[in-house]
Amino acid sequence: MAIPLQYSSPKVQTAWSIGLIALVTGTCFVFSQFIDYRVVAFIYLLTLSILAVIADIIPVLIAATISALLWNLLFIEPRFSFRIGSIQDGILFSTYFLISFINAIFTYRIRKTEKQLRVKEEKAQILLLYNTIFSSLSHELKTPIATILGSADMLSETGSTLNEKQRKELVSQITQAAIRLNHQTENLLNMSRLESGNIRPKKDWCDIGELIYSITGKLQPFFQGRQLLIKLDKDLPFFKLDHFLVEQALYNLLYNACLYTPDNTMIKIEAWNMNEKYVSLQSSDVIKENNLLKVEVEDNGPGFPGEELEKVFDKFYRLKNIHAGGTGLGLSIAKGFIEANGGSIQLENIPHGCRFTILIPAEVSYLNKLKNE
Image (cartoon, rainbow, N blue to C red):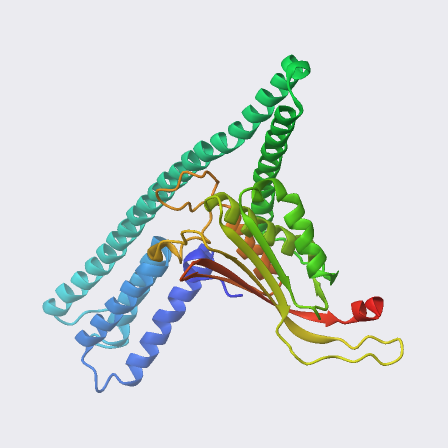
């Protein structure tokens, strides 16, 4: 991939600058009988202005010097001589030389100032982001740790005087806090993986139904007070995809649904194969196709504010006026992991809540039909 001129070495910039001046000079010289030499000076100045925007000051000053000498040599009378025939042309030449240098120096200073302001703004944004992340993480990690320690101390000090129901409640609190703590840690590690850009999906045959039941089993403590509905296509095949990435994405979607919906909410997850054509088996061979896995996670909660729908997948973005916690990483990670599998994820508000739709093109296998027969 070609490197932009402003990021090239000074030698490369100088070579390009001289080459551009040579090209302009040759073109103007060919049409010199139709172009006044004063017009050539304006063309040179335009060329130098463009160079001043994309190159460092030294290559531009070199180009300015060469253009001035070539203009004198090839266009100012007497031509093909560095001698200037009139005082007016001498003043014009000196003015051109001065303007070209001033133009290069002032443009360079403006670029340098803009760069300093950009760096200053980026540092301010990074500092703000760091403070936001630190504040969020300190709360998100401190809360479950405090819950675990408090419940464990109570069990240790008053365990013998607690009844069975009280002990179960404390154990449930510890379990939920541990799951929440593990979830935040996993999200931080997963975001690091996404930021590194080194995610390479390890695709293998995956039973989506088994995957969904495994996730909902892990989140069972968070579904308390909510109705969970799982609907799976009865002829759902095996899909070839990265089991871990899809599991983490669905886990985050369901965890968010539990976190941001009130009690008595219905949470539904549905999965099916978009290709309705059935695939037959010949002897012991499995016929495979590229199909489309569709998974929907839906709830009848309050939904999302319309103006924030496009922002919810942004890293560290948290909904306004929401006090349920979270670091703003879950949906960003879900989107990154689904896209790493070659799929897409969309969010939409529906009349009774919101719906996440996941589409992943994947190779399928109906080997599970043989196992069921």
